[in-house]
Image (cartoon, rainbow, N blue to C red; front, side):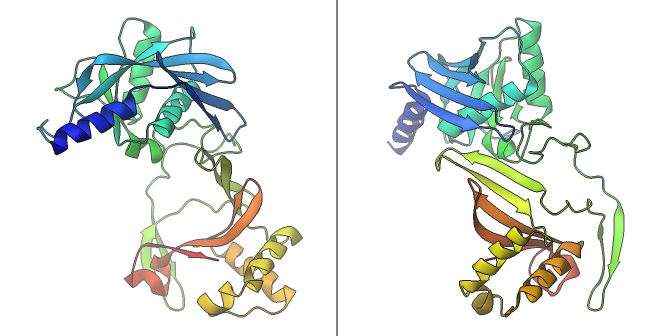
Amino acid sequence: MAAVKRLKQVQTLLTPSAETETRLLLPDSTNVSIVTSQRGYDVYVSGGNVLLFQVLERTGSPALPGTVATSNNIPIPVLQLVLQAQSLEVKSIWAAIYALFTVKPIPRIIISVPLTTPELTSIRDFIVQTGMGVTRPDLSPEDIALSQCAFWQGAGAPQVGGWLNPTGKAFMSNAPFPFIPSFTRLDQVITSHPLRAPKPKGGDVLYTRWVASMKKAITFKMVNPMDDGDVDIYRKLYQQGVGNSDWKETLSLAKDERQYLLVKSKDPHVLPLIGYWDNVPFGYFEIFWVRVSSFYAFNSRYVHSI
């Protein structure tokens, strides 16, 4: 009975009902929307209908890659990808999957991509080769199991329009920074670790994403200690008393606050950030590698925030 109830819940989640529209905004200001209707899920990018996810009559197992489908893996409806435009950019394909996971936040979604045209074959190759989805022997040859986990880790994210390179800098790469052995020697720390990418400059945006549930954009920006506005934001947060009580630090003068931010900005192991909701600051954060600090006994990375 529990399995049947679970199946019905998942099927209800994947079966379109009343017509609704969910809108997203990419970091490069591209508008994306997904319209749920009886015909399926229509995705629009910059106002144009690019593709449709249509619910098929058949189902597939959401089993993890390499595992055997069992009775515990309740079958879910398969969605067929139907092109609505003659050709698609990589960003549009990624944006369509982004929109689908936004309205259907479940671990895996099975889509069918018929290999009937070069365009569809190219879309299938992109999804599989970037790790956004996988093929499995127990699925039909044209089926792909999309992974929500892989997507939110950045699989397939475009160089321009994605979350991790919102400014679209040409030298930024989607590939991981190469593994190069490195060494740090400080007064209290002597350790080896992989070489880390150079720190972004003050004022650079590290991450920004439209959060559909909040209808706002969340952004994390590197602190610029020479910017009076950033120093003022930091000062106001400290005046709330959080810094004194939780961080055990007291900064009473403006020069102390600026000097503190200067030290953190120059430290190669720390990323001082200000978080924003729709350009309204809500917190100050320090993300640092604790292997070169006294926190190494607890974790390899650490977040300090007010």
